Image: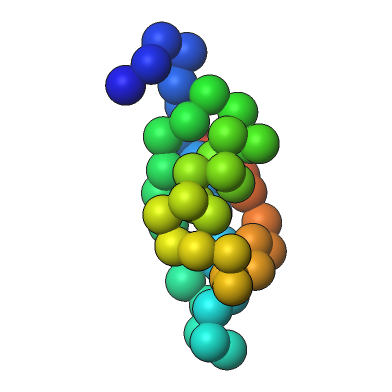
Length: 52
């Protein structure tokens, strides 16, 4: 884990299903990048919210 990381809740649509994932990242942009790297480019990121 890097310093300054926060938890983000990401809602993703893939194969006409909606899923929610929790990712640790520094900001929303990094959270989107990590999500794309893990699951591929074919999924659509619907929302990224900081989890408190």
